[in-house]
Length: 606
Image 1 (cartoon, rainbow, N blue to C red):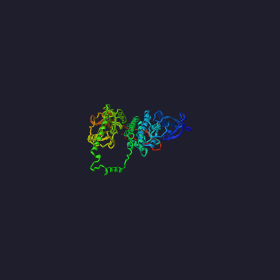
Image 2 (cartoon, rainbow, N blue to C red):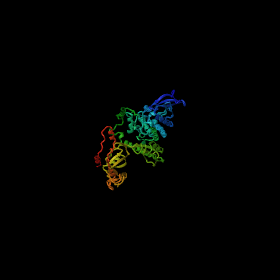
Image 3 (spheres, rainbow, N blue to C red):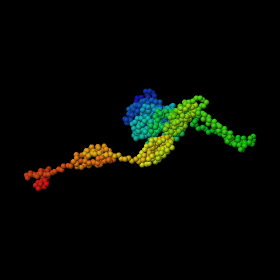
């Protein structure tokens, strides 16, 4: 970069942000005469060729993304040692700054912002791009209140290179997913988890997991259950809370896709919008009504009515009006009429001949179910219920049942799942199977698979179960049992010893092992049989033994022939042969070598 101009095109004006991997500058695109944001990679990463290559490749891939909720990437390049990305310039605060200044955010506003982020992520995931660092700091807020995701490409390059650089964890530990904390493979569901954390923070103005250091926070992402946001923000609707908790599920398989998350947040936003239009003051605190007349003045009025000047004298035995039979009968009649009117209205417009068929909304999200019923000229009453088999926010059942013909404007009650009611798993170990089954059903659980296992316990005794005792479990969830089958002693399998006499050791071993036996000791003895063949075996052939028993073998060997050694008698004039040692001794000046005598020679022959 020379004279503050990058790539002979982008004129750097001022620094507007910095991070662990790059600095961001406000610049002017001299070619198109427009403001842009330029991100320049820090010096620490320029020497890593693998990182730079992946940075360039992923940034170019992200440049293909075109979505209203993603900060556009215009250009990627290198100027000398400067690696840079040119992006759309979005004036305004980040979402993190908005949360700090306004938090906790209005619930509908938070849902709409999360929906914008999910829409941008859904577009990226459809193009095989994973952000890997979704957090409020990387979300820019436009003037009209919409959200745009920034930093596509660079986070992906980092996670593909390595989870750590120079001993520091890359990414934001407060927002990353359990799989990122473990350092295993990352999928689009990892972005969904991070968005769940961001939505949690917008609603409660606090992070779900905090700790003394990054490692402790990472372990909480892996091990601890998140505290429901309604405990910090009671106004959080159950439907929204269910969406947040699903997005923050520990297992990626339990989380919705980014596309499904957009639909779920749209349903929540629609429900909240309808609630506000129908009753905008429902959540407002009403002012306390003021007393129009002080208590002493009212007492004076009563005293005037009962004064001697009054034409009518008060009867001390007369009961107050509100205790009279006429008043009680009148109130009973009013209540009866109100109940009758409510019952009448709940069954629809009886004065109308129009009838409608109740649609089936079971399994549908609350907002969609409400819309379907209201479009069908029916009124809706919502009740909540626990059901572990139905996802939170979905309709479990309805009354009247679908398919019935009713009057228009009939009241239909839909029961929406709150998920399974969380209880503590009891200890069933040691119970009889019948007692365990009865207890499981009594507390609202289901019996899953039942396995039998050999054990010294009485047959039918519970040995173990899954989930284990003391763990948290939802009502309606299945419990797998392991039941004692008792001790079963099986007769050992037997076989007959093969006859391997006269066979070679190799052939004998093959025959023995073919019967499920093993070769034991192998010894040898002198025999007239062919050397290396089996002379005898133990146990004897055709003996019935247990499978796995050993068969010992005796193998033939030949006796070595004796070697005869003697010295021939030398002639009278001939000298005995000299050994090299004797020759050496004589030549060195020692005594003459001894000459064997005839007696000595004869002695040797004998």
